[in-house]
Image (cartoon, rainbow, N blue to C red; front, side, top):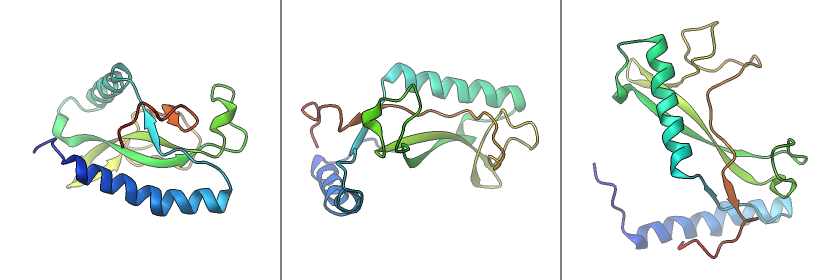
Length: 147
């Protein structure tokens, strides 16, 4: 599997999003929504390492190829929680949730859910292994972006 994508395709994909979904969101919600989320590499590596470690605590035979991350599109509430900047209100973000393969299906995986086989996060309010709160653009500056 190659991790190489032509820049023209990247630009086309980003332009499609901005011309369609982002435009509709900005018009319908009367906001300037985020169009990217940035996470530093150590944070991402630590999250992957934690997924691997927590999965091994539950199942010593779990293979790395059976683990993954699902990216959920999400939006901050109108009044963000205390650790989230106020100017993130109503803007797009990403929430990353671990997945674990079972019978060729990649299920959401929560090693902290003791009431199940740790697959499929329940509707009950419990802690979950997840990653959120990267740097949003906007409100952060877009001069560092190429696309």
